[in-house]
Image (cartoon, rainbow, N blue to C red):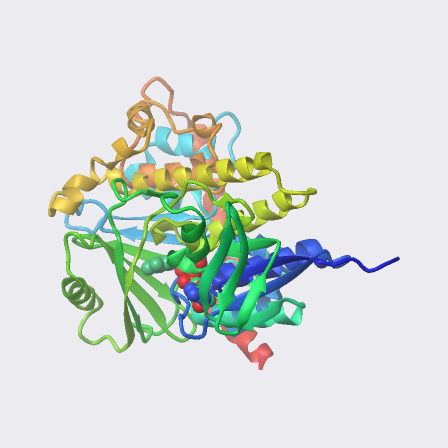
Length: 507
Ligand SMILES: Cc1cc2nc3c(=O)[nH]c(=O)nc-3n(C[C@H](O)[C@H](O)[C@H](O)COP(=O)(O)OP(=O)(O)OC[C@H]3O[C@@H](n4cnc5c(N)ncnc54)[C@H](O)[C@@H]3O)c2cc1C
């Protein structure tokens, strides 16, 4: 059999987007026989964004599909487990207590006639517990500091779904090593010009020479270097719905007893919110805020005040955020993945998830003969759908607030109007449960009606279900749920112990 020239995929950018794309496409296209030569070009002078330290749970399956070894990845990135997000202060305090609710990755599916979340309402359990405490096991594991795994759990498996907290810089280095070991070509070079002809990228010119390619993937972060050259005015901003456009990130020593928590915390401040993400060796924090209302100095001061004077600050970074996405993610022979394609503020830790979606879809759309306009249109429609639906889900966290202490929060309460159909749905969800069919036909596969209910009820947006009867069967259901939570607590390890064992085994 004669040798044939391999088609070339040239990826510009060596952040998480570039390396995740390279590893996955290499696995997808070259595992049996080489089909594409894949190269990543990254600049030494222009660093990676270096934030992005929490994930959603489905990223596990992407990491597994990339062929990563979970224990090795955890050890090399100082990672911890994440079973959900604790939201604090998103509404006014109730009876002097700070408002809080948990958005876990799991939702119990027990019950016969009704699902457990409807039983929870009918049993009026909001008088004694939070919704997540009634219908999720992760809420109980998190409260006990337990991770999602028993000692017997296989890689990427737990008794509840889980994601990770990881060191973004270490992760990018780890992914690079894995990609290069798997045969991805790596060029350290800074792109100075992009050669185009019509809607095609022909090559990129760099300080190390010219690099051609059949397919170009723009992973250059917020710059969107290739896309901007190919098709300017291809950006749709979400700033009307999501005004937070800046962040100040502080890394510090783990506070308190130094034991990392198996969940992310998102605490609302005056003009945005703060993330707290615990790694094995430190905590990442950051204030995501509306830069039209707060200066950098004010934001940093507010964050430092929130963290407290005893905080041991290791590093402080200010970041600009471009919130929105491309109208067309795929133009000609160029596809934008990662921040180059779009960004939604990190309230639900979806950056790596959007890379996962973009790359998986790219692999199926690239599998045919020549990419046609129909294929490009399909990809663009799906990616647009993901971003638009995610925008709505993030807006949901804000628009139910009753906070009125700043203009930011007073305006936040009106943001549903920027999501077509959402105001009507919110009105309906005052009198009926948010159910699967309410979101049918959308692109929301990761955040379904189950996730919507955690946010709706967490924000006290309950439906009134007067016409249904309370019944003793609800009590039995919740006793069963408590038993399941207890069993999970007894079978899993405290996260700290699990990770200590893992690090000891990794040497
Ligand atoms: C404040 C904030 C918080 C976030 N939190 C989360 C989170 O909790 N969870 C999550 O999943 N995501 C989060 N994200 C998103 C996440 O950081 C990104 O999705 C992810 O890191 C991917 O970034 P990237 O690879 O697209 O871009 P970058 O990391 O910016 O990488 C860009 C790459 O392009 C290269 N490059 C640029 N210009 C050139 C050039 N001229 N020549 C050659 N190379 C070039 C750079 O060298 C770099 O390698 C957050 C983002 C922000 C801003």
